[in-house]
Length: 368
Image 1 (tube, rainbow, N blue to C red):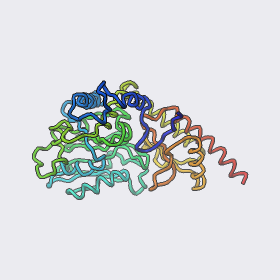
Image 2 (cartoon, helix red, strand yellow):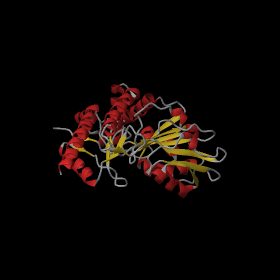
Image 3 (cartoon, helix red, strand yellow):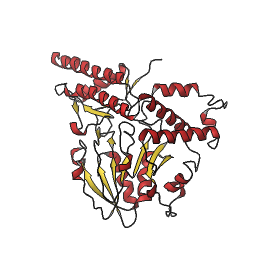
Image 4 (cartoon, rainbow, N blue to C red):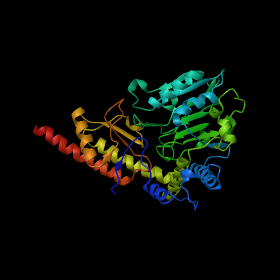
């Protein structure tokens, strides 16, 4: 069967090797005579899968011992609420840097919980750039935390460096670029990420939280919305998304097989360069949404000369086997999401398609 050239923004491409291994174990995992979906989450077999997933993530990301790894549900969207519920004290303020729709949504939820303030924003440019670190304004005396979204799937922008804070934790939504490059986890108080981009399928959300931020005094919160509940129970307070965690473990094994995050970062840089070169060398036919120094290596966003050209591009791309190149409805145009599992060869094929389409479309316009 021919595999699609999958550039979906999420749920996104999974490594083919992961899918093949899962297929081989689909009906009988570890000689249990059952699928992983049929195992008790209290069984020794699933406990081993669960523990391996946590251990692999700690190893791959070099997570310090003073951090807890949690597997939760509800996606990053639930973390928009859980973060302020657990970390925003009544006498403190949460600061947010706005770089796109997801950071706006995170701020909207935090406002329902307590005092908030915008520390920096790129909204006036329709989110074409990441604000410079020196532009971020917050008061260390009253800051509960500073929240950023490290990669913006809709607008195609990505943080290249991160703020260094005094007396307040840095909170990061890394849903769309976790494991795509090397980071120093110790610079963050809490990292959260929905799995459906680089970690695995949708259904599980990873939270990496510094242990001193887990507050045992928040007994007024619903039990399931307290980080302590999940930390104390090793993320097994209730039935977890067992299939998603199993596939996460296979993705993490695949990351190791690729040579770790450093090798993936090299590959992601090469993949992004192929497509950005096709944009930059198109004599203005393609125009990137993001300014060059804020360009994402996960989501390449671009426009064509007009709606007709865009429609023709997407139709011909679909016919050629490409999937998921439509831009988000809020900004239009096109978007190629090139997460870890998207092969370099697929990006090369897309870059070549873009060059040929530009040539043929321009020639047809001249003739007409």
